Length: 319
Image (cartoon, rainbow, N blue to C red; front, side, top):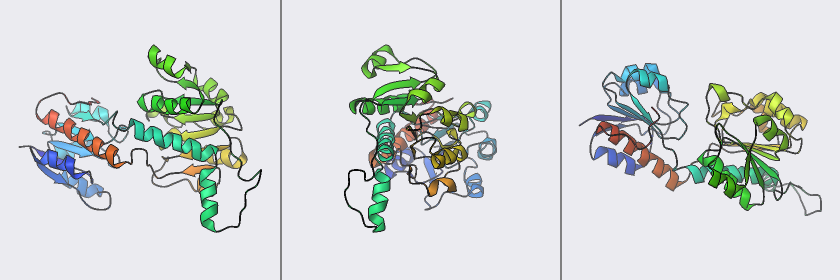
């Protein structure tokens, strides 16, 4: 029987699945586990089931010890994991792709609607108790029909967001490392362009690329200046893809019309320059936040860990 350390709260069904075969030490506190406590708990672990709030680096891997076989991340993104350090130590790293595609695409499109139709602004107005009445020019937003969605990163979530946009009558352009499968490209009538063209022609830019050194501040002052003054930026990928200083300035000065964010550069802290702006919709990282999706993510992470501990290839290996 192996020892599995779970670094944060996950659905009980996944814990029970792990406990059916192995000893499980699961953190159940209401707050994220402290770093010193985490380093202590992982000592002697054969498997670590991690959340994106925990940094899995050389220090943590060494604290676990040479018997560690797998780090199973309960997320599709894995910028919290030092993958080369895992490879160097012979530790398999895994993630949870696919199961959160639709939930995150729903949030992306929800943010598109919130930003373009000023829904968050209207909701705040009602709750504030301010007097209001219907008028021809009251809280006018922007329609989506006939407009262009630019998708940066055309993986599963990008494609699912594009399908939603297509149903709303939008045209699709995309920037990605590789061409779409011809069948999917035909279904979406999507055209591949470089980032500069995407930014210049899109009415809404939605970010779905992975985060890493190559995409750090991919969207900065220069890129925001390339966008239409009537355009909107939506980010449901990772916060540091966007330079929030530059975004706050662009929104304040009207260089772009608005934005919708579910992730932040220094999460959970939100850039103070964004908080007072009406033309940005802000959500607290809700991309995968449905009961069904979080359960599926935890179960896939458990399957990944169990497979490696059994000497089998996991369903979703990173390394």
